[in-house]
Image (cartoon, rainbow, N blue to C red; front, side, top):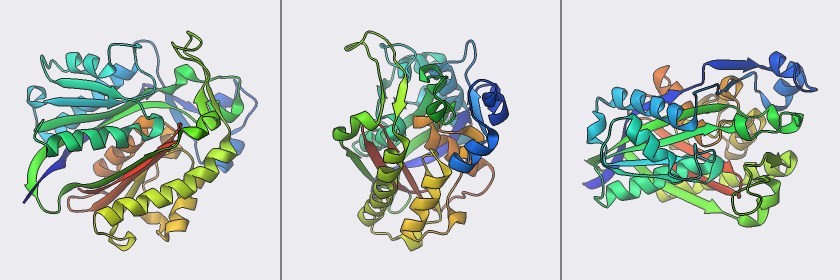
Length: 320
């Protein structure tokens, strides 16, 4: 038997305010038809006063722990993926730790933008497999609305805020849990998707900038390739997959990736219409939605995949 990291529970959290395309059209030169046709997005949630990456992450973590039937004091590791931390330091993970009432555990952040959850999952899974932890919280949480240029209609329509979390628990199993992870990065493409600020360069937070068509072109190729890599490493094929849980960036990217792989669209979990692009929160948020509505069931083979600024990209094969 092999020591593996098994998903024991999932959770998610969204800000109270939900913004429709029509409401957004009152702020910038756009329309519901324009946004839906190009992205599939209809709504996004926007963090309000008192709602931060840490509060959303903590709420998602509580829901995941409840689903797993595990008390917070059993958690030995928190890995939180975000590009929008509450503070430059300390880590947002330590704020979640405090909010959950955990006095002592390993807690840190991972920054790989939209691929962040896959990177965090890989780190936590490796630590569990190595015996460094028995129970881990892996969280993706973002408040991207606070780094958007609300006068740039090509970017501000695409993003929303939210959080998703999974509880990983060590279990001896041959075919259950995280079976494989494949990760990549290529910093040559920095200028295609980035934030034009930072403590070391401008001393400001900055705003998100993106060349959408170029990102789309890279995304379809990279996501299809890395999904195949994750399956190959697990000794599986596309035909074995029950569900693909992708980063929710754009419906056209999801559809194009599925076509490239020969996957039927009904096997792809799509929540981009409800939440828009929530960066590192997007994969665990979509996973939680599909678990709670009954689509994803125990024993299903899942492939989680994402690509983000950097570029970074990755995929994981998971037997749920």
